[in-house]
Length: 206
Length: 69
Image (tube, rainbow over all chains, first blue to last red; front, side):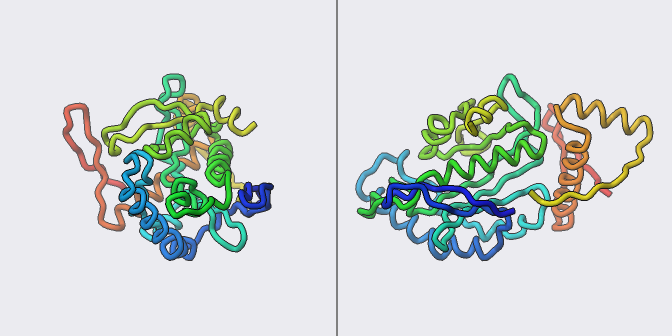
């Protein structure tokens, strides 16, 4: 699957065409290690040295997508990527089996679980600001969450979606996307479980 | 979306009854239930092939290994 979507070019202040795709390969994982990880580590160190609030420092500097290479062949997982300007702008791994809703109205019903979602570091404002630059593209995270909701609908889950949010991403999932923050999960580093009901997912897409 | 292929599936009355019950409980179509089952089977099979073990833990926290063919 490949489809044209739109991102917001912050420098040009206009929407630009980008590509959403699910044919993610190990080459994309290698690209994140080569191009993204050094920037994320450097910016996180600068923020730490500058005394930034711990909750605002991205905690994904240790992520390694190449460790998920074997999952590319597993039906239970789906990957999505977004490219623009010849570069990878975002990457997401979904689990479409083995997770159920925790929302009181949806309890026990199957959901799509966002296992990992990462935006290229040059699109994350707090990281680019740490390096004295402006972020390049807006809406990468939103476009990926939209793809996840559509995947949930395609699976017959009616848009039900959930994830464990890193502290620095909580405002995005809860305030920007409109997910319900249900509980801190002691089994998952006390991260907050955020969930879309079918109605919330529909509202997010509209 | 990936293109889909169609197949005919013959089930016994009991199998169909279970499929219909699961479909109602999970708020999923019968096709979606079977696709879930296939995904889960492949995932478990891969983990076992890698040397993993599958356990169920009961409410007393006692674990029982599940054999998968």
